[in-house]
Image (cartoon, rainbow, N blue to C red; front, side):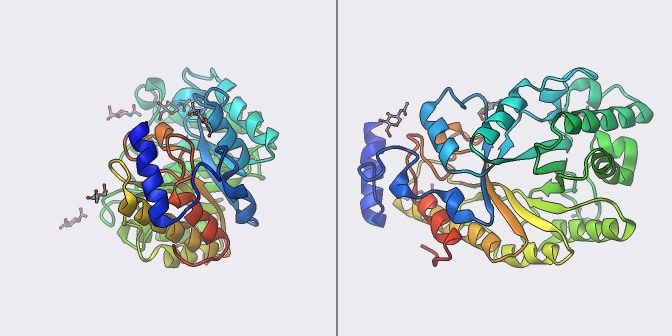
Length: 345
Ligand SMILES: *[C@@H]1O[C@H](CO)[C@@H](O)[C@H](O)[C@H]1NC(C)=O
Ligand SMILES: *[C@@H]1O[C@H](CO)[C@@H](O)[C@H](O)[C@H]1NC(C)=O
Ligand SMILES: *[C@@H]1O[C@H](CO)[C@@H](O)[C@H](O)[C@H]1NC(C)=O
Ligand SMILES: *[C@@H]1O[C@H](CO)[C@@H](O)[C@H](O)[C@H]1NC(C)=O
Ligand SMILES: *[C@@H]1O[C@H](CO)[C@@H](O)[C@H](O)[C@H]1NC(C)=O
């Protein structure tokens, strides 16, 4: 703790950012409120009920800085429908109620994914049974949250990592439904409720590369065939210094298909404790991603995957804009700069 404070003081002096003196509470960092600077876009976080209302500094930051929330796990299939047609909406409801209480929107997450499935979905069903289970799942969840979701990641991580040889990942959905899997989920979702924006969300599609080319042609096909799709989510889990140069150009080509685009799970993994150099690079990386969104008219939101480093899904990666003490890091100020149209730090 003491060492960390000293380190932070040194870092702050080097990059000349205000420290804990100016930022006396975690949320009022120099009165910079990112959700205000982001307008007309949304600035979001993955929210986690393990910490909401339990870690008060976390709660203060999350209540102040964000205008859209994604439940980190609470809407995943194994959490929300652990047994057939038996739904546990409690934790997801808590996030939705919290979002309403701070006048923020919600991105639902997610319906079709090969991970975090309960065994009854992943193992035992025939194709016909799985089809009914999928439609029932999507229908019940969307009916429960009717009027409350701005967007939904209907489809998560379904594009193969072996493009162009393979289009979709090998999982229970493609095993049972082949190429019809993804259109099926989107069609079921749209049939329930026409309001939420329907997303395909994925990783390693941020730059122009074989995987994003594959998604691009899949989407061209969907649009031609009338498969309902509104938007693409670019996860943006990056290692330090590895934001692709073609990010903005890539966002724009998907936008040019007539789709919204969004940064949905941003974090910049330091793979260790921060030092002045790495924190400065992390700030630049955040700036680059947020700026790419700001420069793309149809980019509607930037969501970070967590809030503070101590509660990240990447232990020891220190990938977020707030440190373990919930004090803003250089990345926080870089996000503000990017939303305000200021140059790279
Ligand atoms: C919460 O923040 C305050 C002021 O920034 C700090 O003094 C306190 O130690 C923090 N609490 C925890 C549990 O981190
Ligand atoms: C689903 O089953 C496959 C094959 O048995 C397994 O490899 C995979 O880890 C399982 N997925 C989940 C989410 O349980
Ligand atoms: C795709 O298939 C070709 C021919 O079978 C093979 O040479 C190539 O390595 C494969 N590429 C990938 C990315 O798997
Ligand atoms: C700072 O951190 C980076 C990334 O973890 C590391 O590669 C580098 O060696 C560190 N630099 C110093 C001066 O400690
Ligand atoms: C909250 O985050 C922790 C740490 O990543 C994780 O273990 C836990 O499953 C999350 N809880 C929920 C409800 O998502």
